[in-house]
Every structure is written in C-alpha cells, then in structure tokens.
Length: 240
Image (cartoon, rainbow, N blue to C red):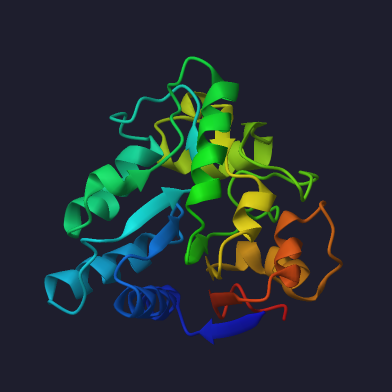
C-alpha cells in the first residue's frame, strides 16, 4: 500500500486526477471504477479541466460505479447517477452509454444485484476510486461486511446516514438502504486509488494502513491488494 500525504484537499485532488489521467493516456479504453461523495469531487473537477485543456480524451473509456441509493430514480438530484453526470460525465467526452451504475429504482433489488455482478465479472476496473467512511466503510460496505461479499442490498448504519445527511434538506430524507459493490468486487480491480481528507477520517486511515485486517474495519482488507495508492491530506494522515 502506497500512501501519499498532501498539504490539503486541493493537492490531494490534483494528484489523484493525475494518476487517473495517466492510466487513461496509457490505455484509452480503460475501465474506471468510480465513487461518489464529497471526497472525489475535486478529483473529477481536475479530470474535467484536463479534458477541457485538451490533455486527455475519455471518449473510449467505460465506467462502473460503486453504489446507488435504493428508492431514488436516476434523475433525482441526490441519486448517484445524477451526481456522476453533474460532477463528471457532463464535463468530459465519455459516451454516457458506457457508464454503469446499479439502479436504485429497480423493482427487484436482488435481480439488480445479480445483473450488476454479471456486469462486473466482465468489466474489472483498471483503477477503482474509493473514498473512506469515518467508520472505515468502502462503498457502502459497512463494518462486519464479509470480505467475500458481492453486490448486495445494504441497510445503512446511523453513522453513514448522519454523514450523508449534509447533502439532503434533512436527515429524514436520507435513504436507509443502498445497493453496493461488495468487497470481493472492489478487490478484483487491477488497482485501487483511495482519496481521503479531514481529521474525522484519521482513525479509519490509521486502522486501514496499520491495523489488523478485520471485517470490523472494511477498508483494512486493502492491505491484501497488491496495487493500492492512498492519497490523503495531512489531517487524514495525522495518526500515521
């Protein structure tokens, strides 16, 4: 596990974008595993800026996303499908027919999980972007999710609901369930890039990098992956 410590969020975002852009330049048909939440927004802005400046093209790239809220349609302004369009896809030349997310509005969640797992068997990301929950979750794989889990329906923990409530008008609007890639799916990516910022993530970063490998801290499993880069600011790295 390679750990890069930056001064701040902006530097973290720039370095992460440079790593992803380098992968796409080397393989214009790369498969990008993408994440949502506040952590990668700066990374996506830098990717869009590089595209606008003519430094890189994403026209042959495909993508798979980690997760989606259950009960939100793709055009809901808090869905992750909407997040990806407004924060990245609408600002680069990717063919949006080649972008993939689980459907939060599918009538049968298990069938949708099965569909997405079959897709992931065919589309293993060249790089999987991850954020880190304050409780150590990756994707929506909450503490004590089995390491052999594949795409599944998740009951979100109170801490995750609270963390995500800042994006909604009230905590009551936050969905209580999500569909998420499992830990096994994440670990099948060829490489993993995690972006982390903020003192509230410092304990989770310490456990992930130096702690016991345990389902109690899902991100600790990344110690078992051969190609992981963690880019974090000084606050997130303060306990290393």
